[in-house]
Amino acid sequence: MRWLRRAFLAVVLAGAAFALWLVFVWPPPSWYRTHWPSKTAFMRLRERQASATRDTTPLRYQPVSLDSLTRWLPLGAQAGEDEAFYVHHGIDWRSLRDALGYRRDQFSWSSSGDRRDLWHVIRTSGERRDKLRGASTITQQLAKNLYLSPSRNPLRKVKEAVIAYRLEWALPKDRILELYLSTAELGRNLWGMEAASQHYFGRNAGRLTMDQAAALIATLPHPLSSNPGHRPGRMQWRQRLILRKLRGEDVEVPQEADETEVARPPVDSLPRPDTLPFVPDTVRRLLDTIPLPVDTTSVPPDTTKRP
Image 1 (cartoon, rainbow, N blue to C red):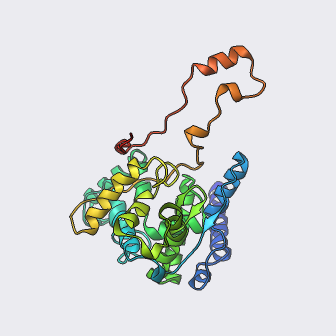
Image 2 (image 1 turned 135 degrees about the horizontal axis):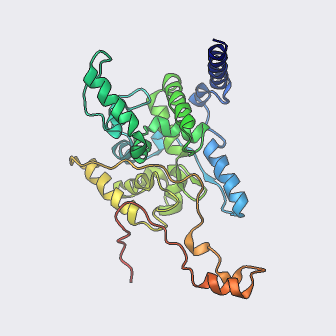
Image 3 (image 1 turned 180 degrees about the horizontal axis):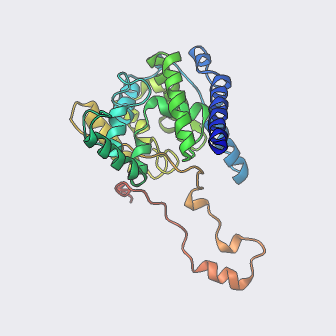
């Protein structure tokens, strides 16, 4: 009984600490009704990573209202990232169910078949980690950008879900979409559709064509490994699917997991062994025999034509 009391007390204290964290997290979601973030948690994370690797790429970030964006950007975001955005309340349970592989339309605790199928998908959920990460809604992605990190810790996903509900409670849908489009990562130290539009296409985001808007949306959620300016093959593959969706075709744009926690430097920037200081000749000759790593993805290979 003493062990049970201690376990119960630990659970209560952990719950209380989590509740206090939710209450006092700063700034609260209601702050963003009228304010833009000066820097998001995700920006600060990338800033620390850049400092560790001595990356001096300047911050490019220019938040703007939905009225300043071409209509193809919010439409493309829904087509490529979250079709049910204006229907769900922070979490798309249907997409989550599909990602888990639970095929029943209804669930009842009184049904032994429902309980058996639920237990099966929970036991095998580890095999579907990538699909589960790809099932995040726009609201969940905004929660991660504003407050959290791309860590794959299960507790982070719980925080993300709770914050997503708080965002939905505090902000109208258009404001959530506005914040997401202005804070999404779209390249190295490049944040939001306005800054990305000027960087990649030399024009403001209100003047983008449908193809250009689809290219920016297709950059998500792998902006560092494939974007309009760097290895665009994967981006173009998703762009074509998003364009078909925008033109009314019944196609599915696959949901993908986030980029890894720590951004790897481009392969081109990795030092050759002959530039490394204090390396003995024997080790240097051994390093010379090892090829530089090649960045690969799980989507079709880069088919960009080259001269």
